[in-house]
Image (cartoon, rainbow, N blue to C red):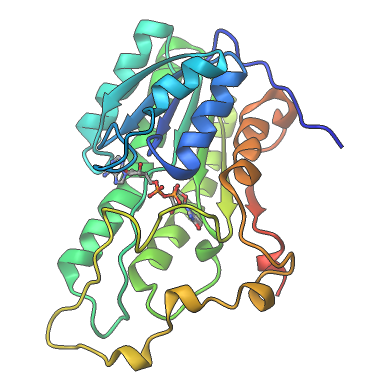
Length: 275
Ligand code: NAD
């Protein structure tokens, strides 16, 4: 079967949310392909108590160059600064807008501040990343590629996913609109839509917080248990995906092999979207 070897030598890649999970493996794979990777995240260590090497070291071990820039993607100035930082390496060629958080809550129990927080990170962050990268590419006259992280939640609703599903639906449409507007400048914009991937996203994540408010608190019994996901029935391939399963698609979409692909949502989900 074999795996694809990409060549991103002389290319600069920004990966938001690159400290842990999917972003970490995406950054490592770009490093393996010889890229200069800027890891843009609110934290440098995967978790506060985690002693594993930060992603930029992993990228260098894999053969790339790397740096970490502390970035809160919900702040467009921070995102602008990280794109500016890429100028030191010749400017951003590939922008991976991947950072996101999950907060749990049904429509009835979700408070507006929590909703705003999720949308600020998951949607405004992607908007700011697309805009800053595209402006920079056009300023330099060097079009590149943007890859956003969408989700199966971009098109499939689940109980308790009010904030997250709304945000990922928006990421899908943002990807399409940006692709439409930027096509004439040869800037391609695509999205990877992972299925259920083995990361600490959700309850194991330091950003996770169950959100209730406004007096609407449902009995737990009425909510699905996130851990009781029917893996075998929900996922045709019968297993969760690994970060390795997902990462290659980012390199494909960013590469010249995908030179005529834009506005596309690429499911990497073991067939979840079929049923
Ligand atoms: P993760 O929690 O391991 O990684 C998310 C990263 O984003 C973390 O490093 C975190 O520090 C960072 N981050 C959070 N808020 C940030 C902010 N304001 N600014 C900058 N960085 C911030 O989770 P993951 O599973 O690797 O998720 C990565 C992406 O994949 C997300 O967009 C998520 O929605 C998406 N996704 C994950 C799954 C899954 O099952 N794990 C499924 C579909 C989509």
